[in-house]
Length: 207
Image 1 (cartoon, one colour):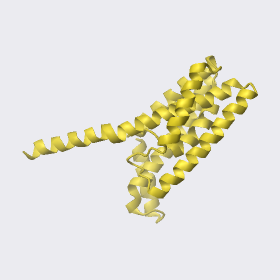
Image 2: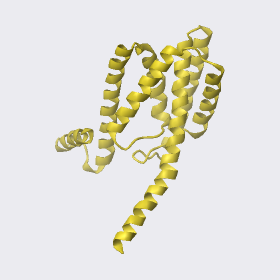
Image 3: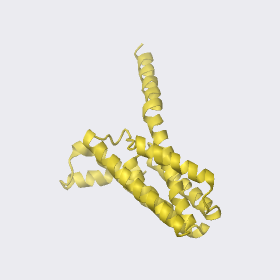
Image 4: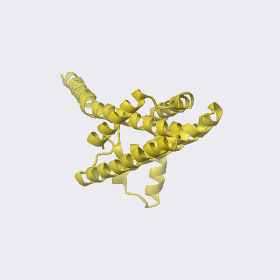
């Protein structure tokens, strides 16, 4: 359904001469992403109010979204799956942060590992959004800057005794690091398996 809406938006702008038909795939993907994010943000507000964890969800989101944009990570093929997965992830994170707001030793260990993972392997691109060499350098620098700002925010909020804010940012970075690892596995390992499987099926049909 969301893909059809994106297609209609793109076709409308093409008719108006605003877009080139050659950029079809890129813009449809971008519209899908925009619609997906808008729906997710609306769901966060609704669920946050209903579940009493709106502030935790907002802080998590403020830390998660900018870094995720430049660090990259796993992307689901269907926008509907993206909405469901994102909604579940943020709701669970919000409830977890509401009832367990104080960072533990394991939280700090996970966070330190996550900072290392993000620093080393970001950005992780997806098949719909391949980055050129220059873009990769820009995305990497921006992900480092955002990671540094967020890490500094963690230390400041710890000193100010806003422990739930510190933990919210830590959890967002842990999830991003996991997303990066899953993204690499999906694009390289599972992607190769899928390509080989498709080639095998084509060979069987030709025979």
